[in-house]
Figure 1: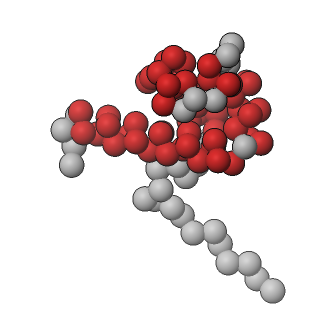
Figure 2: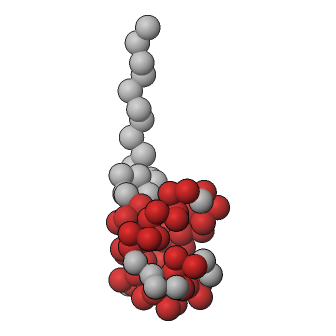
Figure 3: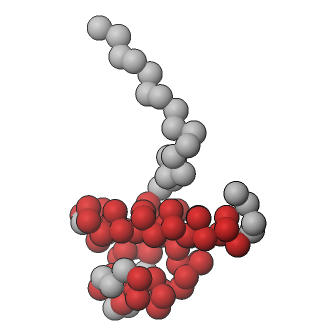
Length: 85
């Protein structure tokens, strides 16, 4: 039995990104305060850190989905502000 190679995902902006890279980019773009407003979870509001956020997000699929969605929204915002189609 041969396993088929995993197809590349050139159109998926999340492909190859770690959760840590996503959270770090969101914090750099929005800051902890605005991130906590957009996604009101304790790991962003109460003594926030990358480590505590990663621990929570890895155990909580619905919150991870929200973070990934906000990351995609952020990428679209950046592209629009740069005038790219």
